[in-house]
Image (cartoon, rainbow, N blue to C red; front, top):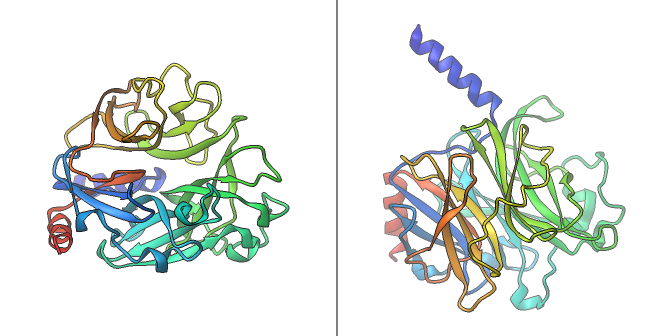
Length: 344
């Protein structure tokens, strides 16, 4: 009876708290945009700090085929499939700055895999407006979708409480920044929901607007206080990587504390933050790209159990061309499979 009660309590907690599935304590996968080009690369680590490239840092899938708008992939975010516990998901910014020579782009890619090696993708070109979304009758955030100029840095968060029109529960909250210069003055954070198949997407909804540009959000649920904590690059006030929190996944998220941010890089500019935990540690690790100097530095600092008090930055080791990316814990079986594949 005690076992059943404990199991029931765990299921109840899992149903209430949105959270990406965490599994494995053997090592880590660093899935990232390559600093050598606009493709997704892999690196493996046993301790979360020292890594080695797979495939010599080259693309892990056919970027031209799976990034259907521009043939480039940036800002890779990877996680496990949370509704079934089997399979993997990835989201990327569909963008090829090396071709367009602009910082504009028009959509994102939602990718799926059963083994972390073979991927399929559904691409969403936001300029097409309501026809690409699965809820065309929902309100539009823009009058004219064709003038969108940026759809940046999508990430994923599993939400078991989300309810679809047919009554089915559970959805993947995809959050990202949008900028439509004809209708808004700066990049703002929005969110949509993807279905269980990870091939359908709802229309964007505004996540928050602090009165200045914000990009590169990273949300994590913290057991230390039962809140959703967001790391984000903000351009207004004192620019940098800051943290804010909310009782609910979709907010409201108040403006961050101006005194608690990643400040030890001095005047160097930082973005592309990604937080993860190392098994056995109470606190967090926060990775980010320090991009304003040559060579650029990909850094990993420490934070406390409340994802505050950033300290002790070190440069990632063993990755030839690190850039904006994410971290996922691996089982021994997953680690060894990737290691064998990546040694080709």
